[in-house]
Structure formats: structure tokens, C-alpha cells
Image 1 (spheres, rainbow, N blue to C red):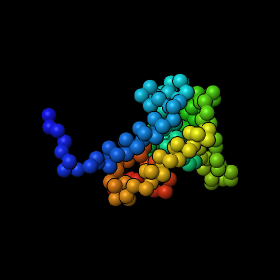
Image 2: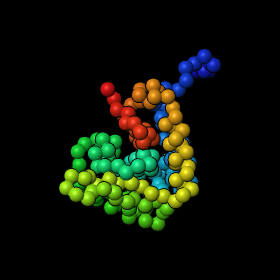
Image 3: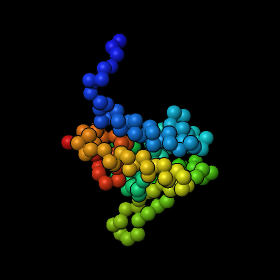
Image 4: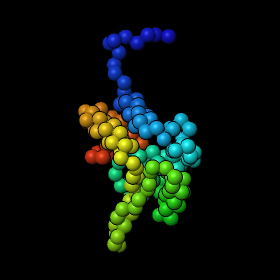
Amino acid sequence: MTIPSLSDPPLCARCRCDIAVANALDAYPDIDRHAHSVAGIHLSPYLWDIFSLLYLSRRPLPKEEFEDFVFGRDISYHTMRNYIYMLRQKLRDSSFKIVNTGGIGNNRPVRYELRQSEAADMIATHISSCFRSAPVASRSSMPRTICVALSNSIAVLPK
């Protein structure tokens, strides 16, 4: 076992991203990322991934982003609505609410957004802004993970 020296390179972009995600989820006391629960309510793996993506993104998300970062495949709007409905039912007694935005007109997709109490909103906004201030070079080398949700202004995709 070797002891790291001061000359060792800093953490890789993926590690920094994982730490930022963990810090963002740990910042709010009602979220337990180890037990995958919110306000003491256990969430299934898909519901946890949907909640995490909504919580970390801080913006309305279309179905396509859930397909890319949660399901890894195409899903129908009916399936997406069912998962959102189940998550809403689980979160009804917490400070988190899921609202629909858009969807009016023929070609406007429905987007889902997580809203929360003011205290949780301030914490998440602070952590999100810290991540966005990181150098673009370090963000561009990140793998395609839920880390994309931490930045509202960029989409980090593999080349």
C-alpha cells in the first residue's frame, strides 16, 4: 500500500463529478442517498434515478433526458407518465413536488421539474453554481453520467 504524495495528480473528472453529486444529495437532510430514500420513504432504483436527475438538474427535463440518463433506452410517454405518477405519490408528504411544464400545442413536449422548499432550493443552487464554475476542460472529459444534470448550461456527452 502506497501513501499518496503531494506530487500525485488531482482527482480525475469522474471522481470530482461523483463527489459533487454525493455532496449535492447529502446537502439536504431529508435525502438519504445510501438508502435511496426521501423524507424516510424508500424509492425503487428507477424512481431514485428519476428523483436524482430532477433534483440535480435544477431545470425542467423532457422525456428524452430520462431515456438517456435513467432508462438507457427509448420509452413511451405513457411509461414516463407512470413513473412520474409513482414518484409523485411517494413524494406527496415531503417538501418536494413534481410539476409539468410545457406540453401545450402539437409539438411541445411535456417537461418535468422538481420543486422544493426554499432552504433546499438555496443549498442545491449553491452546489450547482460551484460545479458550473469548474473549468470547461475538466467537464468536457467526464463520462456520460448523471453528472450532466449538475450543469444547466452545458450537456456533457461522450465524443
